[in-house]
Length: 210
Image (cartoon, rainbow, N blue to C red):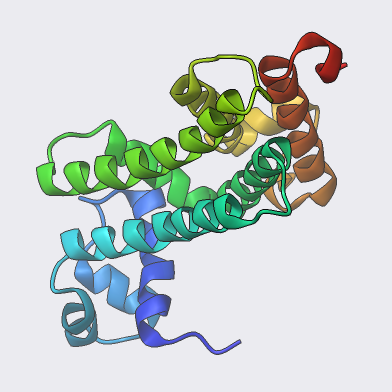
């Protein structure tokens, strides 16, 4: 697959920001890693801040579009939509572990106000959209009345905890040192099923969750 230069820069920026942090990564570092010149980075993004915003928008827009797609799919029931979103989030977060490490660093850092505000807006938008699907299930009497936003946060938080530290993940799961859990299909499917089972127990009336 041929990757355009803009995407190439963004992909390398994610890895550098995750490893070295925003302040520790220079435009020159980005250009060198992406094998482009500094002028090209500036041409596409103008600044590191705008580069970060472009990365966040690209990543968050995927889930926004996916949630809207599931909402409009009349062949799916309420639980099907939740199951699909859990699978999508696990796949996206595990395949983009570096981005999510950087994302959570930025969520905890309020020094860069514009980036922080942009990140909060994008992050909150997807949580609200996901919560809306749960709310529809509550209205349809498919789900018990629950705190919809905290339910979404619980799902994302469970996945995020797994990717917060590869070493910790390996230790908890009993994998050998150096194991790559995020590319392990068996582990990914295990995580998907585990979260789905937890959320079924949380959302469904007792008779249906068994």
